[in-house]
Image (cartoon, rainbow, N blue to C red; front, side):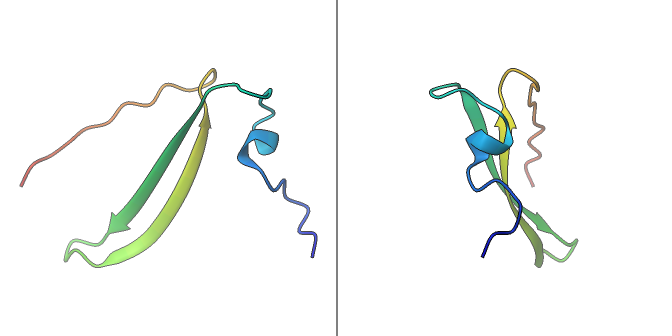
Length: 57
């Protein structure tokens, strides 16, 4: 079944073969630590810089 979406992240991001890409896997939790969302995120390395903040409990 064809969904109309590009099947490979490299195609969706219009990346050349061998171009660098950032991959982020994340889970979002509610305040009581129940998971509510899971994401696989592919980022074109030439278009976006990713920073993060780590909070220790």
